[in-house]
Image (cartoon, rainbow, N blue to C red):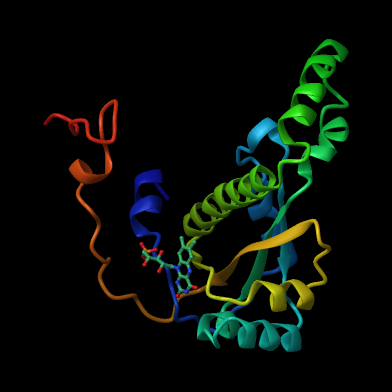
Length: 206
Ligand SMILES: Cc1cc2nc3c(=O)[nH]c(=O)nc-3n(C[C@H](O)[C@H](O)[C@H](O)COP(=O)(O)O)c2cc1C
């Protein structure tokens, strides 16, 4: 699929063909693209949990306001963010030249240590960027997706055994659409959402 087509055709799909499967091998191929997403200091705060078990899926659905797509998609993912990902820096940078490690590792430590809000922001940013890659990589295969924050984070954390240093950033349904969604909803005009220099600056010319 052409990139422009992929972007234009991606929609949040809520109606899925429940009998269609996505194999582990297919998911692995998808994930090889997803993990190419950017993250601050390459800390890769993301972890993806596929709820393959039917009973688990039903429980997550109950914790997600009963949203139908949670039960009917081919794969339901809990996309998680690691709050203390900065502590993984020595492992992530171990293959890098010693001179770079000596500079970057103290920088990362000083930047994140003790800053809970920043750690959380980063976990959400990285996981969200990876989620966007996932939606586009899925769309490129002709698969449908919908990201979801309509769920009880504590209940979902418990259901998938998240440790306290992880948060569930969003759920993601992946599968095959049953019917087309309604026409795309309103998008704010570019003049409103893109400004030059300052928030009260002009928009783009032309
Ligand atoms: C962070 C985030 C959370 C969302 N949560 C839900 C959700 O819980 N349930 C749902 O049906 N759609 C959810 N959506 C989908 C949005 O409603 C959808 O992206 C938006 O209406 C634009 O439609 P489009 O994705 O088809 O362009 C979410 C989207 C985002 C980005």
